Image 1 (cartoon, helix red, strand yellow):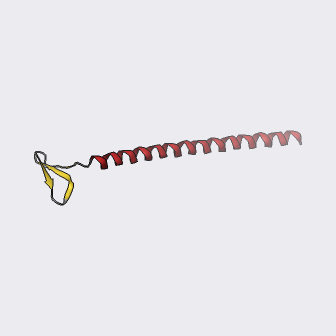
Image 2: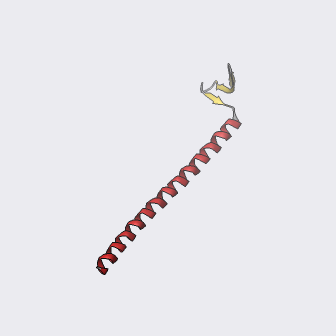
Image 3: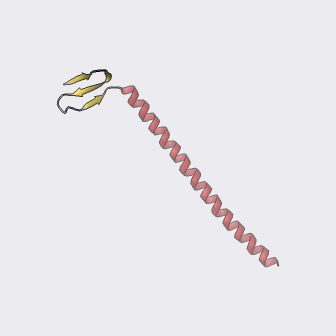
Length: 74
């Protein structure tokens, strides 16, 4: 059996387990959507960081090749 929690319209107490249960399904769905958006943003950030790392590595290689070419020409 579940009892309403006083002054909390979206909460109920489960009398069997004595736990508090949220009945706010819309709030739960908003929370899940927000978490999904945060995970997607983290994924985009991770991809951008990897891309910058790769570009820096290419720049180092290019600089080394240019320096080698300059030394060969001298």
